[in-house]
Length: 609
Image (cartoon, rainbow, N blue to C red):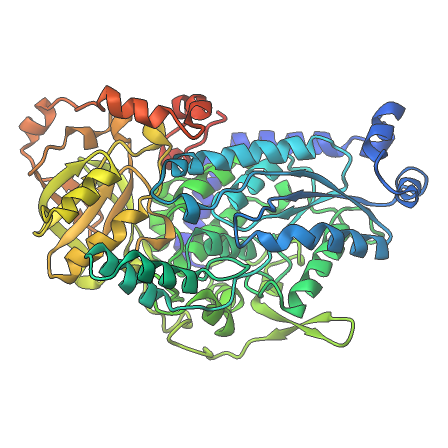
């Protein structure tokens, strides 16, 4: 095992000892109870089964058959989640075939960041994660289930479901994915049209045609953003049926894998003879969390997970921080190039070996913990195989991948990686701590030093770009975008104009206390700056024209201002009119309590502590 991997894991275990011990004690207490239907009063049981068919009532009450709960994030707004419409029926039929029963315990909200990007609704996006976690808790609070199946894929939905499930750590749990949409227009071609539109060289009709060719059917968007990073991390954590992340929604194999998820949930429920229960709180230990962190780094995944997985870990009584990510990044090689840190989409990634190839390489290199529990076995090795459907019944068999890469432009072995270090970098300095997704940025842009231009809204920056005010070497600063200020929206609308400026030869970078997620692209972006400006962070000391250094090589984020002058400066404040805009309209009033109580980005932007 890699020395750094072991050292990081050991210090996380030590740091978390008291919190984790208390968490495991609560799980043990819950596991010592009678089953739900046996400890409930008759009126409670009658309410729980009132709408079920008579045969199911008989199985539950008289036969004491295993009973599964489903929490679904189905809606028609997310292309990735639309396939879930028919999943309850599929799951129920398979459970019946296996002698079990199923109820949909509840639904959780799921918003599409692609729909709300750059709009006021995006300010609810980050907080939707904890809303989803609470909704998951409400569903599972019915407390009659032997195991749970969680249906969710996209950005905040998987972390929210996982946080909610970990607060029911005694319950065995399987995540059920639905897969990516088919390949459409290439991501690079899509980006080019966006840049042309930003320059006014093509119109809205051409842009809409391009976007519709990219986002064109059921399934997850095909770039390697937060949604697909979620799926990679769930494979690395052993919470999926092995190899199920990136199979198309309408492939026969997808149906077979969904059936296998039902059987898996039953197998780990503790209700099948000869099978041990695997509570999710036992599966997700510090080794499991480190495996997820390593998988993120090795694939150049979404920066959002430097927020989300801090919160996920905290839900299992485990404390991680950005220094842990940074130290792992120094030893974890980059093994995949998927857009935006390459030209391939996730379908090409899957065809090249996908998560199975990456996990195998990391395990063989001693860069992941193999001896962990998983829903697919007693270690992580099953996640190095690729599933295939065979026969008329669609049985699933698993194949071992060849040793050499199928396509070395997409995946590489650990002995010959794209880069010796991971795709994320921690930045630190007198402007605070931030992260940068360096894997997608050209090496000659890993250090940018230029005068800054400061904005407090995306709209103001876009207006300055259109007016030609940014045609120079510049560090664009967009502050008051943190969780306290306005919910920490993603700022993807800034990527095309910044890419245009970079394409013209200017040395540009973005610095913000907001987010950019997995699609930050080729422009260096120091994001998640903490503490945020509204919480007294030093980003509020910055003034227009200050020279700012963003260095992904040495991990520096600093204003090159005399120390005495910097110490004497007062923080600027957000204008009351702008603060009022952030607080009202499109439901933002309802999230005021979350904005007040939220912890910093590095603390996971947690709202429940």
